[in-house]
Image (cartoon, rainbow, N blue to C red; front, top):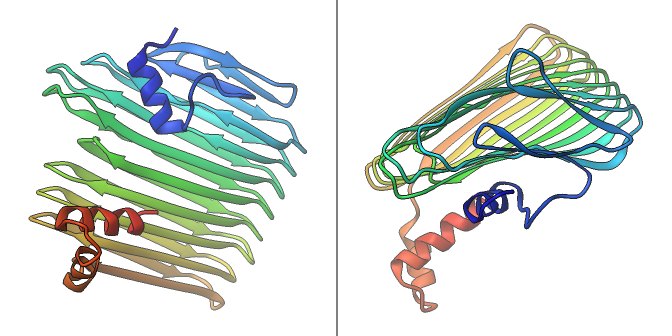
Amino acid sequence: MLDQIQLQLLKEIADLEGVPKGAYNIRANSQMAGRNTTANIDIISKEGVSGIDIRIKPGTKNESVHIPVVLSESGLTETVYNDFYIGEDSDVVIVAGCGIDNCGKQDSEHDGIHRFYVGKNAKVKYVEKHYGSGDGMGKRILNPGTEVYMEEGSVMEMEMVQIKGVDSTERSTIAELAAGARLVVRERLLTHGEQTAISTYDVRLNGEGASADVVSRSVARDHSYQKYVSRITGNAPCSGHTECDAIIMDKARILADPQLEANDLDAALIHEAAIGKIAGDQIIKLMTLGLTEEEAEAQIINGFLK
């Protein structure tokens, strides 16, 4: 049974009020807290290491898989390996994410390594949210590693969100796309206090007609630090776009490093990067509508990160 803190974490990272419908695997404090499979989606525990294999049958449509992780004990450190095998012509939603509530003095850390094998013409929407809470001195640390291998004609949309409470994170994502495959990444990130967040994306467009659109929107406050590195390599006639759009506040620091490599005459690649502060006239305009300066800032940030 999940306690109230764990249920609140589930709500924050997976929008769940309780046990989800369909296939799921819930992990709480390094133990399995619940699992369900369906006729088309199987979940199998790995042998020798912590983690699961998720196998989705070819042709599976309109089904979802939830695999949230919650930590509510101070001092826990774990590395989990999850592999997803998405069959041809599938159309599914996968909801992951990790929530850490740390009220103790020791650091708590979850490192999740996710590998996706996306079959021909399959479509996947993947949502990964990170969240931290608790008033302890121990840090909340999350280091996700993601590998994506996309076969011909497949589509993957990735929503990567971290809005509150994570002291340190290093996100590493690599993707390899075959002919006609399409990858869309939308990262949303907010850091504050002394938090640090490093995001690295390495996308390789290997087949004709492959495309990628990798966009990060972030806000850095207080003394926090962010680093965004995005590299798109075109090894065939393809199209790629990467963008970093960031708001910097207070004494924060941001490093944006978009990179492109074209190894084919018909590789069309674009990168953009913008870092700036909130415009004073935006705040003044909202304050004339009755908001305080803090409320105006919050409204602008919320709209920016939507």
